[in-house]
Image (cartoon, rainbow, N blue to C red; front, side, top):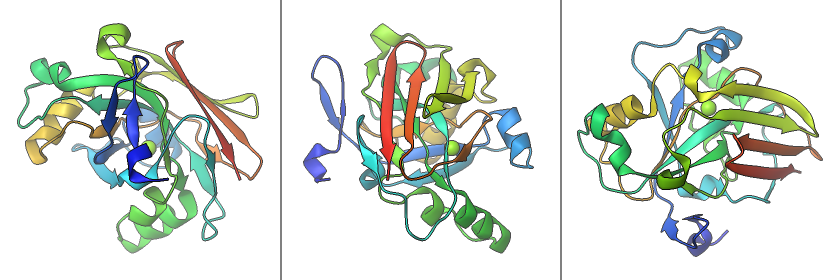
Length: 220
Ligand code: MG
C-alpha cells in the first residue's frame, strides 16, 4: 500500500501518519507460559516498520518462507504527542487513542531465530504483519481495562482482559520514552494473551477491543 494510505484513522476523520511500531513481548504471564518462557524482568521490545501496517478489512498474504504464522491479538496504543522520559503518572497525556491489532508472527522462523540467538525482525516485521483497527480517542475509550478477543472462522481462540497485562500502558510508555523519543504517530503493541495459534489461507480473523472497535482480516 502507498505511504499516504498508511495513517491511523479516527472516527471523526482525523488521520495521523503511522510512525515506528514498538512491540512488547511476553506481557501476559499465561502467554509467556504457553511459549515455555517466563515474564522477563525488563520488557522485551521489538519493532515493526510502518509498511507492516494493514487497515481493517485487509487481506493478508502469508509469507511463502513460513509454514506457521500465528495470530496474536493485542491492544494497540497510538502516541499523539512527542514523549521523552515521561513519568507513569503523565503517560496517558501523550496517548491519542487505542485500537486492536494483530501481531502476526512467523512462529517457525521466530523459534529458529531464538535458538540461534538472532534478531526476530523477519518473523515479526514482514509486509502485512501489523493489521490494526480504526483508532478510538482516549476521550471516548478511557484508560481501560478492556476485553481482548480474537476469533478465527467464528471460533474464539483468544479472550482475556488487558487487566492481566504484567506491565501497564503507563509503565510501558514510561519505559519506552526513557530509551526512545516517542513521536506522534508511533504506536505500541502491548503484548498478547494466551491462545495464540496458526493461520491458514482462507481463514477470516476477527479481533475486538471490548465493544469499542473491531478488526477483520482475511488470510490468503
Ligand atoms: Mg505480540
